[in-house]
Image (tube, rainbow, N blue to C red; front, top):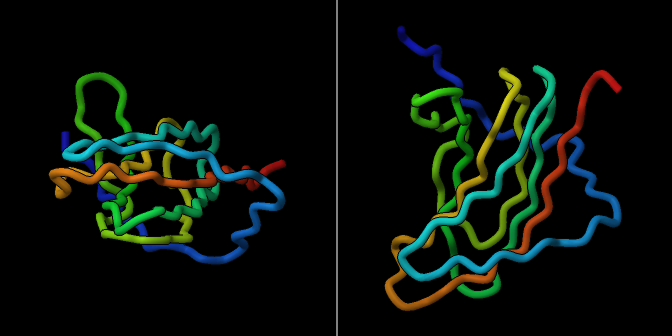
Amino acid sequence: MEKKSLKCKRDENDMSFGNEEFKVIRVSPGAKADVDVDVEKVGTRLSWHIRVEDKDIGLNVLKKWEGNEESQEVVEYSRIEEDVGSFICEKKGGYILRLDNTFSRFKAKMVHYKIKVDNPFK
């Protein structure tokens, strides 16, 4: 079965996070860290604000599929020091914000992030 492409462009509209505090995650050298997000409805806006304390980190967003299928990239990989972005989810289910530090052999990265899931049908 052929999967339909889910590639999305980042959408930077309505990026208000209110007074929400940043969460912090340490990404070891040579490692990746995943932040899982559950989306309950098609058309939901998934938004993020990410800052790295020192240097940069790789970021991409993946759609998780049920069963044994591999995750599919929906927001292309880029290396960032800080990023604010969002996209509209075309499918409900699990998404992954992947923080990639595999290019760093010695330096762990402290990453501060906020994630917002806006249900359009509230």
